[in-house]
Image 1 (cartoon, rainbow, N blue to C red):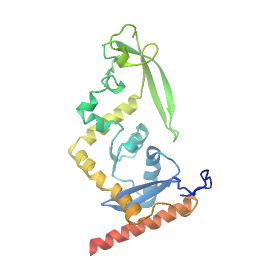
Image 2 (image 1 turned 90 degrees about the vertical axis):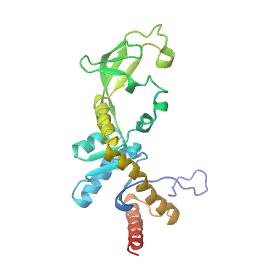
Image 3 (image 1 turned 30 degrees about the horizontal axis):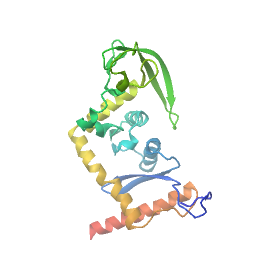
Amino acid sequence: MRMKEDHMKNGQLKAGYNVQISSNNQYIVNYSIHQKPTDTTTLPEHIESFKGKYNQRPEVVVADAGYGSEENYRYMAEEKIEAYVKYNYFDKEQKKEKEDRNPFATEKLYYNPDQDCYYCPMGQKMERIGQTERLSENKYIRQMAIYKAINCKGCPIRGVCHNQKAERIITVSHTGNYLRRKAKERLESDIGKYYRKKRPTEAEPVFGNIKQNKKFKRFYLRGIEKVKTEFGLIALAHNLAKYALAIG
């Protein structure tokens, strides 16, 4: 949309709102408007808006890696939603040649749950030295455990393992790791593979139709409530046009 701040004095368009939709067979069944730039932070609010409209939660949610976070996985687990949502390096894990390019990544280190320690690529013990917290934009608190290698001095692979000045230190969310493992199991199941193939044919064509075929590329109203109404009319027009084609 056109902003009040126009430093270039050329009436340029800027992203003013983040539009989220849920679709079923390319029909828009829910939409929400957000003043947040990243998709990750919009998912709980979007699902809550779905519950407000239909008085029930969605049974299944399929989404790409832009929505895969500990916060979102935990939210959907608590809501008893069957989630097929990738995390940011899921696709890389599916391609072994890319996976092997960084064998020193934190997620590839061996963890011993009985002793609560990690082992570095050289087999050296990395002991737990503390804990910290990280706060998300949505005020979700991630509990992060901190582990430190005993001695990296003289290690022959130190240069490719890490570039820290002293011993290698890693921070790990065990809750996040558990939720990602569960997500991976679902995504690699037969039904997970089906949903992964189906997902690109859902939301993307809807946005493509609205932006390219219908030429709706900017909001003309101001204020989030008016923008919700404006996009609601666009969603209604999209659904009616699709239905008209379906019934001939």
